[in-house]
Length: 487
Image (cartoon, rainbow, N blue to C red):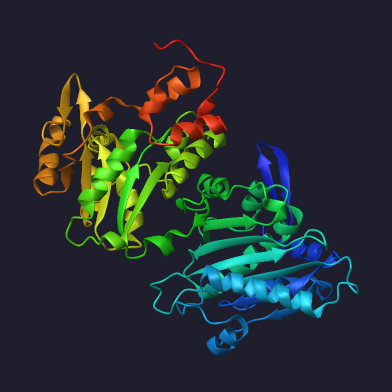
């Protein structure tokens, strides 16, 4: 229904949830005499605070509403950014911190002993006149749940999908109300809070590709799990987090970079995964048009891989993430089953040379036509999208019946043979020539079976330090009391 109606979620004929209207959400906040704070909105009008003014009773909620549109005014209030940009996470954080500090400074706690202060802020760029850039922004809230409590923070990055500035403004206003309402009334269930951000919104209006929770109320929230929810809920196609476990904005780290990506289950990450990465990276940085200092490496796990056992096992996901982060890697969770889609995704951020690292089995799979039946141009369309870019595949060998399989002797379907030869001949597929033959005997699924059933010897198949982590944190079903005789 409309923004002021009541949305109802059904399961069959049964009502499972009634969603308050945007007006009702704003009114409930306004009527809570203890919620009090400021709105600072830059880039799309004062769209969020407008809902609070219109719903009634706003004088008990709004201490101040402002928009510092002029850059000199903005810099005078919030300081100058090192990179000179305004639609950034650091700008949003400065806005939130500055406004909270002002509340604390200007409002006497003795006079307002029960007030839970908050600051809501956004800094966004809506669609440009040429309609080339659809626009994006940072949105956040810094707030208290108890008057004497430290502040919590929820910060997210959005991408607009609509092609009209006025519609984007309205979308931002609805999102802002959902965020403030969720922050105060759904904070004890961040997964639900995340889903409720789309109340009265559609996925084709807005993409949320980064979110971070922090503060005392979110001390036990792992933002990597929240990242996973974004992809799982269809809010975005891909999310990333760094070695420190914090979510990072893909656009910020991939822009104009040379990208080397390694896809796998990493369940767990093994010596063969790390050897593939290290040897391919050595080859990649030797390429023309590749600068070592401008190269970004990504370990990618697809959602379909996480779902291989049915429903997504969050503990299993966290186990994989824990090990990859401990090895200093950046992890990407994506909804891209086909390789050409991940290449298209990277290409939206960079035109620089890219590399994909894969084993022989993966490459043979790529030449299976069944994956491309949904495309009007079939496999030729997919390969055009995959190899038209400045891309190389670094192929790690495989051992089969005592033979070493490389790009020279792998077998694809007879119909695909000439197509494969075309790409191999044109240097799009290159072998990793230096490798440890012992690594070819390592398979993640076998290592996983050994860990979970207590068969000894799996430790030597993993990178240095990871076996200790698995034992220490009991990852992948490891049980120190379950040790079998070696099979």
